[in-house]
Figure (tube, rainbow, N blue to C red):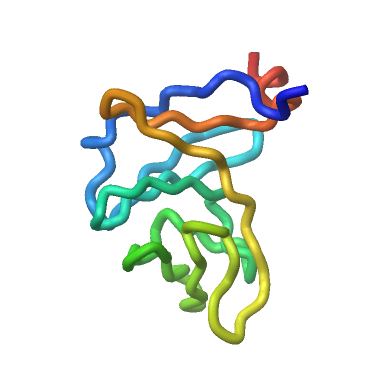
Length: 114
């Protein structure tokens, strides 16, 4: 059984600035879609594991984002806090097709959104 339903198109890669993000509403809550300087794209719930700060408003550097509230650094690859900080924000599957960004939600949430 596939745990993910269809991939959802959330926009063009060009709509996300390099070292920036875009917020997508979902049944999970807001999802932050990040574009690193090397054009790698990541998606995380837009919630820092520390105090729930909006990661989409943080500074993207390499494959990490610094939360704007308390400077926690979150790996975009894993959602894990780095350094001495501990915590994790859920990672959302993301892929690029024909310069379009697609994300996948867990099947139960995707069905609820229909």
